[in-house]
Image (cartoon, rainbow, N blue to C red; front, side, top):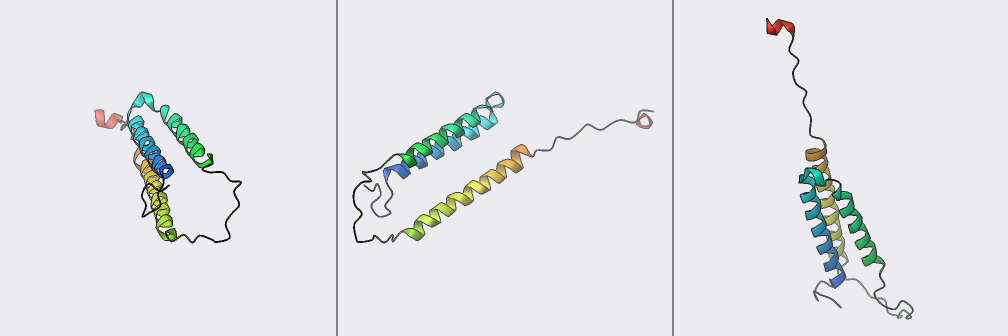
Length: 118
């Protein structure tokens, strides 16, 4: 059953998009709360478990014999381009988090010498 008939997007993909969006929002919110930084791995673990459940849950009876006619996926390029867009956005967001959050320089205070104090 396609949720969007023209694109062939089902309810499972919609659930995955909602789960990913909510988890990204939760990680961003938890990143800005100093005492809640240990909740980020918990959110990521829940995300991984939700993805595994949605991917491994059987959609239909797999014991049915396959038909002799092969289906041709006309939306292959659209699906691959969406996958590449998601992969590029994840790579950019991870590099931005690394550059702007984890790699913030901590500057040391200047040492005052005895010559400057006299």
